[in-house]
Length: 298
Image (tube, rainbow, N blue to C red):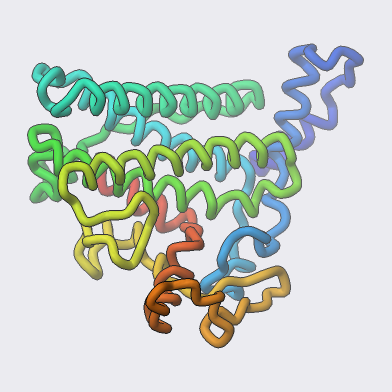
């Protein structure tokens, strides 16, 4: 029997209770959620759809969404935990303020892991074990490292942190369309997404304070931290899009109807379109998010 169908049938057979806090009731609701195929497969109102036709080919379940989110949260949590456990952690971060910021972000990531694990546990699903991570990208020495000095060079550490956070924000955005039929999960994911976005912004600010050419939000003017055509670069693919969609889908004609030009002096057409690209964060599909996570899993 299909696992998700099995979950749905168990949910239907569970006795109804009159006490909202009853464990059985909680379990019944959770099982129902995980057994549903992601709704909708409808275009999300608040996200861009670079290829609307392809979105309809996906068949993601709520269980898939939670497991992907847990993998990404394991990744981020372990990344900061390993950095904070460095023998020279007191000096590695350069300042007490930097170290405190990383500690705060690590605490948030641990809380996200706990939330997702609890969702799975209460649904009776198996909680996936935390993978083995190698943040140099060498697959535990099986291949040349992508970031060999990630835990000895603060600038490299912050570049990897930016990569993880930017990808994480886009990945959450890419999954919300599969939760539109479940307000509880949708709200939990949107709240987590906004926190991840603040992490990304703070990491970018930390990099800028150390001289990096980067804004606090994704911008075409950022100095690239990846090489075009590589797997890490997929974290930024499509971020320069100036075409956005509303349900239909119908394109918003930014290219032909530019926003009001309030620049002094007036901005060029190219500069205005760059600001359009900055104004929208793009979703990342599950396949690409998984590929990025696998850069650091062995």
